[in-house]
Length: 274
Image (cartoon, rainbow, N blue to C red; front, side, top):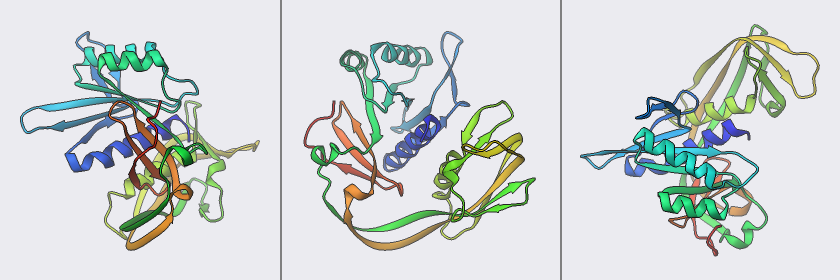
């Protein structure tokens, strides 16, 4: 997962958790920009909104897929953007947590802090990850086909390691093919069960290559084909084997686990995350 995938997962989590309370995603990614009182446009990673029936409240979520903890300087920058843009609440989501001064200043400025990271061995002790028994509805997005435009080859997921495929767009930026698959799978969750969906990604002037390969293939784009499968199941398994991500909200002391299938489960950590 890279920073784009991190933003997509963050959007998915907040969108999923917010459905019960009417939270909506107003925008996300590089195209999501809000004009401030200063006249400056600010890019917001994920922008949500909810209403109490009278007023609408907006929350700006800043994603930091960094290898360092977030310090007070970053918190100050986010606080300034929130104030200038007239947004009601700010949240910073970090892969590596926060420094002490960052936490103190965020609390002072009422900026929410969330640590979202992959599962580690220490989480076996920190979280009550035991046997999980759930009778639930399993929603599984399935990739049925990948058709590369201008090549005529149908890459089948079961025969191709898509984790090794890179897309080099016209501007020269290299994007992991898995990012497109992750986004498409999340979109399939909104479709009717067993409805086969095809989506074309236009990428004029782009190239396709695998890691370590010297040659690349010029493409105009590609089509992803998939469907959402739903079935009622009785699940019994060791949560540790299924958990992909751990999410800790520092100030309200809420913790969640996220599985690779997209299931979100609230957890009760033994110790408050730092």
